[in-house]
Picture (cartoon, rainbow, N blue to C red):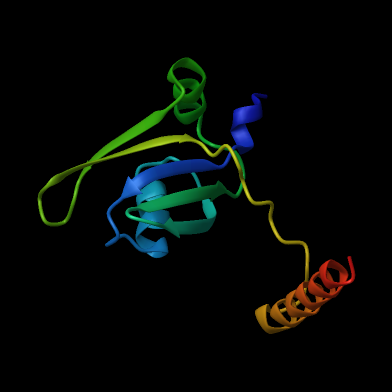
Length: 123
């Protein structure tokens, strides 16, 4: 099994009109894989990071091994042609193993920040 079978993919410079649900649906519709998570990073353009629930389909892995990318060409519901060029995500964020909710995590994060500030001030 290739190490790429579980790789997170990055789609740089995606149009901001795409939502998580649309991206998951596109991957399902085109038989690319079953997505469990989509992360968005926005600066001047949107970078999207895709996480596969199981293993990527064989054509995806083969393309990544041979060319370093996977290209999906499709027609939007508006009738225009669109291309998503995907690369292996160089810095994937691991799946969370915590049962805590976002509020609990934010509170603990604030405590850690305060502790770091306290340690820096004591130098």
